[in-house]
Image 1 (cartoon, helix red, strand yellow):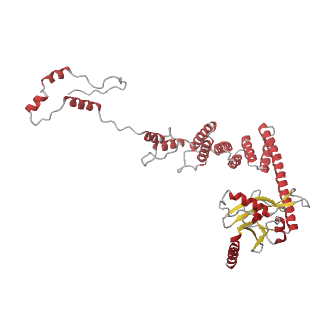
Image 2 (cartoon, rainbow, N blue to C red; image 1 turned 30 degrees about the vertical axis):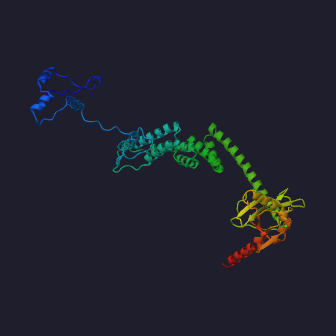
Image 3 (cartoon, rainbow, N blue to C red; image 1 turned 90 degrees about the vertical axis):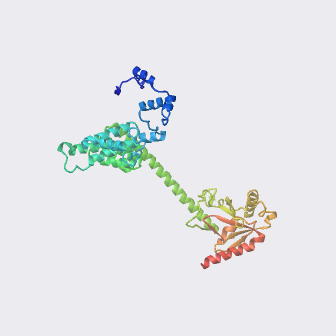
Amino acid sequence: MGQIEELPDDIDEAASMVPKPNPTSTASSSSAPTPSQRVENTSDAQWIHPASSKSDEAKSLQGPTPPEPASVDDTISSMNRHPLFMTSIDESDGKGGENIDLQALKALAYDGTPLEIADNFREQGNGAFREKRYADARQFYTQGITAVEMKPAEPPAPQSTVMTAEEKSKALELLLLNRAAANLALQNYRATTQDCTSALTYNEANIKIWFRLVTAQIALSWFPQATRSLEIALVKFPADSALLGLQSRLAARLEQEEKAVKERKGRQDRKIAVAKALAKALHSRGVKVRMTAHAPDMDDAIIRLVPDPLNVDDTSQVVYPVLFLFPLAQQSNLVKAIGETEVVGSWAEQVCSAIEAIWDTERKYAWGESGRGLELFMDTSKGGMVKIGKKVKLGKILSGGRVELVDGIVQVFIVPTGEAVEWVQSKKNASNNSEAS
């Protein structure tokens, strides 16, 4: 029986893995029976093709059949579970168990004394911060703070592994200071002020804490707090150029804020004055306006006094938004501004001409000669209906308090003459049923 030799690790991969034939065995094989002789001498023997025999021998030398190669998706998924290649945290091993590599890496991060662990997280946070990965940096600093504040193990750890009060204070100061920087970069200004306030409890003489605190307070427009913090900091560091720069920035922001407050007050005062002038003008004309709790936002379609909204005299005029309604067609058309001296019928004619090309293809609302075939109506302040003339000015219709402007909008109903009586009756019935209920 031949020997099986173990191959060295540095074997040439180009060398043949199939052994050379033994001359002795080759010579002896010449006396072996041919396939035809084997069939003649042994009736029940199965004929084996020589090529097949060689193929089987080669397979036996190659060893077991290798497994099917993994797909690209499976390969990527497997790599993503390894901490070095992770693009997202995968706590599993892909088979329902724990990711041992990840758990080992986590355990390694907490290997050492509390001070060593805290310093490790702070260094990782500093590295992430330098790479502008501010969210990662904040997370590392938070882990460091957690490590420092962790309760001592039970039973008590050796004295050499316990942080002294001074070490703990310094570690928390630096971690909070650095986390404040990360929050500041992320524009989490409230969190920045919280970190700085906590850091000051460990060291009020750290100028960086004061700088970041004031910077965040200015960004939040907390001007009284920023002013107070800066005053305290400048007492401690009166010649610091960074703090003096913050003082100039705060002064500029205070000036801007004062200007903005004056502008807001001026706009509010003018708004009140305009409202008073309009109320006076409407009262002098006897126009009733009722606002509801659900008044629609009409943007610039509002009642206003022109040409000067603050001046009520003989030259002033009130303009109104007018909504022309076609109740039987369930359509409407808004005209944003119609003056009190203008005739309602003229505007109704323009609206009816405009809708012909849009939806009134049957010309049911064609104005015709002087608006014959159409009737105009308005609601009264008592819940009824009033028919209005097509040649009457808007101001005259609204004066006297007979009609009411709900939410500051004039509503004019346009109904075909042949259907007007029936429509008015239906409106009255609806109003009566509403009052009964």
